[in-house]
Length: 257
Ligand code: IP8
Image 1 (cartoon, rainbow, N blue to C red):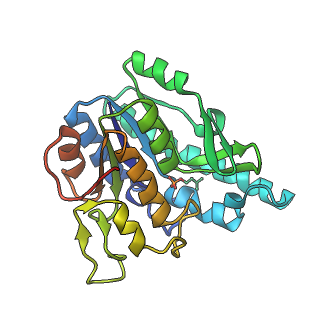
Image 2: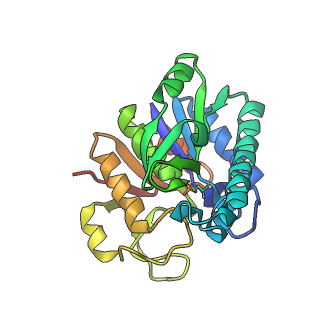
Image 3: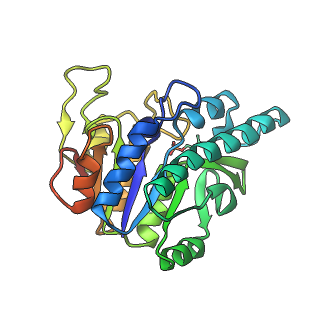
């Protein structure tokens, strides 16, 4: 079993509200189909989630009633994004089923404490591809919160003991600094815990779901479970297919401990 995350920046225009990158998703789905592997697919929220979630401070949990219309809007928008992805999977002949975290996952202080794994297991038994995504979920302590695709990747990788977890982003992998603003940024082909000494814990980051530091920490935990963990560029044709097939591909391999 292989776990794939299509990052929000690969499937949406991140700074343009609710803008779906249809052609990119069509190509990525083709690559998934060509590779012919058993996959659980996770996708991020991109501009269907982060912009409004940040405006309504949903990542902080319940602060006031004024957030509630925002909660409903973000839930609707990420469903719409998921539906766009599901339609393409169906059109390309992949029998995929959507498992929205808002109805299958619970948080406590922002961390996942429950996932209905049985739903995933039963759909996998039926030879379908489960698809889940970054969403708004109920939170025991904070009433509600944001469940990111990365949090789902960690839990699903561990529960299903997957052989490989592939994170598709809009850059070639993990860099020594932000490659979109620093021309001297260097791609790091193998990343281990020592990199965390060079990344600020609370780096300025546009996502409501946390810093680069936190994302890499999750990846290290995945890689520590005997799972090959790769970060690749989902915008470059062929890379996802190669990574799925186990061929060598430009990107970052995360080393566990
Ligand atoms: O894009 C975020 O999920 P991510 C989910 O995987 C929302 O970080 C609703 C912003």
